[in-house]
Amino acid sequence: MMYAILCYHEEDVVCSWTQEQDDAVMAKIAVVQERLTKAGKMGASLRLLPTTAATTLRKTQEAPLVIDGPFAETKEQLLGFYLVDAADLDDVLAIVKDLSEVNPGATYEIRPVRAFFPDERVGQKTGT
Amino acid sequence: MTTPALNDPDWINGTLTAARPQAVAALLRYFRDLDTAEEAFQEACLRALRTWPMNGPPRDPAAWLILVGRNAALDGVRKRAKHDPLPPDDQLSDLDDAEAPLAERLDNSHYRDDVLRLLFICCHPELPATQQIALALRIVSGLTVKEIARAFLVSEAAMEQRITRAKARIARADVPFEAPGPVERAERLGTVAAMVYLVFNEGYSAGGEPSRAGLCDDAIRLGRLLLRLFPTEPEIMGLLALMLLQHARAAARFDPDGRAILLDRQDRTRWDRERIAEGLALIDKAMRHRRPGAYQIQAAVAGLHSRAATPEETDWVQIDALYAALEFLQPSPVVTLNRAVAVSKVKGAEAALAMIDPLAPRLSSYFHFFGARGAFLLELGRHQEARVAFDRAIALANTPAEAEHIRAQIDLIQSRA
Image (tube, rainbow over all chains, first blue to last red; front, side, top):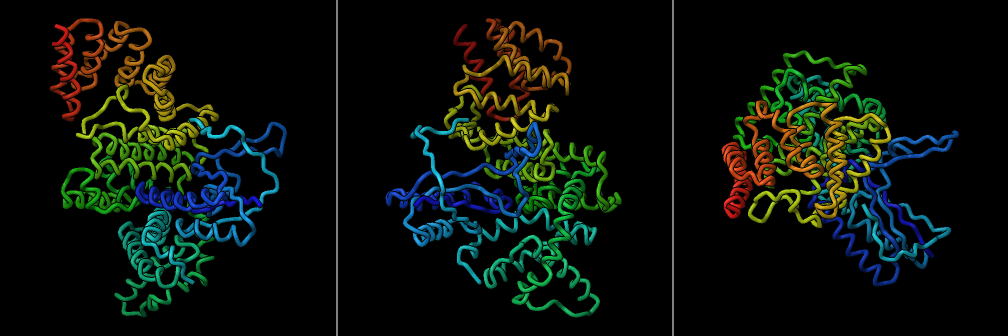
């Protein structure tokens, strides 16, 4: 079964990490990801830019409203997510436990995936 | 309940740093005195470092720090008046449950005004820019006096004095504590943005020296803070974008010996793609507002450079147009000089030279003027005149790297002679 693991964290805190601290956390996450990849469980994973770079479109009226920033102002922000292929909830919880140990302060929401449309452009990177 | 990861000193320090602007700002509202607010926050941090590893971190660290800091400062007053002390430290985390919701409600509604007031105070118009920067780095960013002194290449005692003077001047200036009105807010926002960009430039011009280069990160953090306070302000998006795009080149700007590498010789694969992506995203957002400003235009120029995989792919026509817009918005001989560089690529050195000639009286002691003039003349084969300009540039060079860059061009003339 496929699960999306949504990673929430306080952006203020993450943005106050030094480059070294950030690199250290990312390196530890990479180790966990590597293990999951070898076990054939790892799907896509991505980290989002800060919410200050976000834009929201609301279609509550004709000519939809485009506003700066994320949809909801909350204490914690969605900063990234993973897609994993796990046997059951226990299996995915074990994965999330590993992830949480290397990323202090983060909260994870585990969402079973209803439909998945894989991208066929394998290996392509997002351009800037 | 204690989780091992949350006792991580890095996590605690990160949390304290992140909470600092809000907490100091709220404490300033209570005590209306910078020193008291700072000391109260310092005391709260010490208690956090002692109690969080034992009791686990509070649900809302900022509210905890504000409450504990306020109580500690009040306790100091009481002690002097021989009253009851605070409960022992190990009970302090419990305060969180009882009083934090109230403190949180109080402070979330005040958050924006609190932090703004703090930034405005640091950028008080009566303070010279050097004091504004020092104060903001100390109070808002939480750098130690020693760190700031090192970053500005002055002694610790001198920096201490600079900060003390700034605080004394603010105390005398009778700063209003009520929330600023919309007009004042807009006016002061410009001052704060300028201060943040000055901090950035201090780091950017430091030549890759680590103790000073950290100022770029501090400035970017302040820029993010500012954008969270003004999430729909295009110029603040532009400011943050500009800093991110310039800082993205950090790893490519200097050779292993610390010598500057010019933009067209940098290894572009070493540019930081994450910072570039964020900078470009912010420019896109800012443009939608159709309210151009100096930071947005400069960010757009930096954005065009970062979009070019090689120097030859640079869109100089667009850069020329952007500098023309900047000349209109914020006329200055330095902007015209920058535009002339773009013009030299689009229309040739002759046109560029004609453009900068009238600037000579105003830029007679500006290194880059003579550097650019020499380069245009060299391109036109006017070696004698180029040599004169380069000699003048060397005399005006601000860093050994600048002088060296000019010397390399003089060598070029000699090899062609």
